[in-house]
Image 1 (cartoon, rainbow, N blue to C red):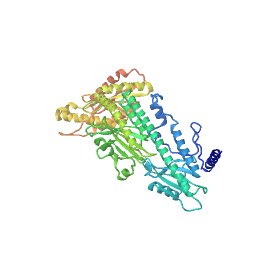
Image 2 (image 1 turned 60 degrees about the horizontal axis):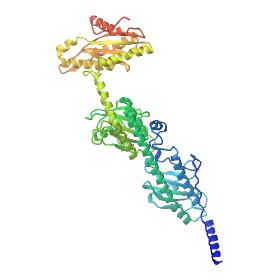
Image 3 (image 1 turned 180 degrees about the vertical axis):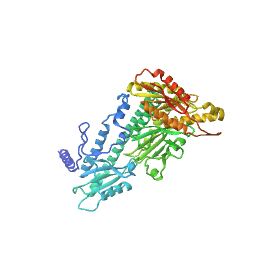
Image 4 (image 1 turned 30 degrees about the horizontal axis):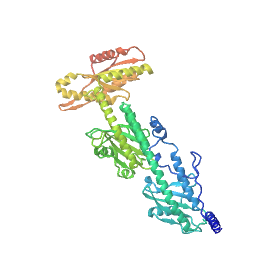
Length: 544
């Protein structure tokens, strides 16, 4: 019977020990999608996502090929909150908080997770300094004054950097100081290891999603041959992949002589407009010529130094962080452009963001190079090589468009034919080189005088033309007179002296569905003939 008595004593002893041992709360899985009381910062998984645009980008991919649960992040944050709640109860604390350095705020500690409430705790100056000291020196700190323990913090490594776990007490714990310290040290290791695992999973998920974005970008670019459409795809997807607030695409040439902004995303600061140029000595120009990306996590030093982003254009005020990457096919090939991205809020760009931007720029380089080459060829085919104005082919297309718009929207439009007076005498007296300079100057003058919607072209020889859409008879006469006076005042400096010329103008009107489109050129020519024979340097309007 002795062994029975010994067994009974052992069982009773074990039961008594379990009763005295601190009880750990059960970790139960909350209802799907619900967070326990407490909170945590969004983890790395959310970097580079914008919900509506992201869904559009990823729509082409089947979910069973690359499954990504929208609630995984919520579950991971709930897991972090629960383990902090476990720590708080285990140490008889009111609240437990995990602290990590914020890369976008010069390493200031921010709450990564907390066990109580929807918002992280607001610490007083003394308590914050105590937590900062624990994180910086990676040791235990606590407040030694007062009626009872108020804060105890333990430094732990977070993301290979300084972090801390803190306990906060509203009432005096029944546990002694040493017992609380032992329990904090035990659980802090568990909190840190769990958080590192959750962050690793979040970063892996973010990389997976970025890869999906880039694959979709490549597919979309291949299916779009329009240069403008491709430029829009690049800046849009670059903003999604890097979570940038704005992005611009800059086109360049191999001689580094003509870098120009060609496309901007919605939300881009108003100072960054199409046509801005960049030379060496600017951030954009240096990235283009060096063919190396540049990450600026904090733009304040550049703003203080007034370093230009484009020629005479600094980084826009309010931009917190910038990435500039060269657009090129490979490491060994020259740049064909630069992709610039900016953030005005949130955390600073990271090296991962910069790498993603460079990957996307490399993916886009081939498609952009082809599209831009096609655009150049098309432009060359429709451009007069002497004056740089649209040629007859381009003008015919614009003429047909003007007639169609007039028929659709009503009102009237005008065709103006311009002929330089006594141009043969200019060539005979000064030479063809001087004559060419005169034609260039006349073309440039017409361009300077026209409205935004007007079109100017060289039809051939010394004959030019102007299209005036949605213009009545009085408006057409006024526009032609303005151009005539500007040419009359023109002094063209050439190698053989200053040359002055005049021009004659023939104007013909087109009214809505007047069936006169086919005769419009003939009527404008007849008006020009009348101007020539009426003494030149004048405007004549053809009868309706």
